[in-house]
Image (cartoon, rainbow, N blue to C red; front, side, top):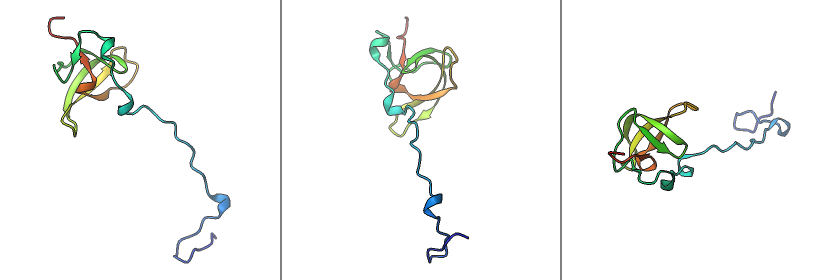
Length: 105
């Protein structure tokens, strides 16, 4: 039986305690910024909202708009995208971090 610490809870012996392993950090939204120079002449999706199925450009590369989900806490439109080459599951991005071709291009 494990020892008691007087509070009625079992005390874990030091030999059984486990140090937390460092967690591999994945990319989070603030790390991903689309470079406007990658698509000269393209505008922010905040300026021109793309239609479902339209090709857009995001920090990960060329993608397709699946749908407009709603709005973020900051008022930006939340877009569901899927990579044009299908290399990952659909994901979400704020409209200001997505580039779209200007009308007529």
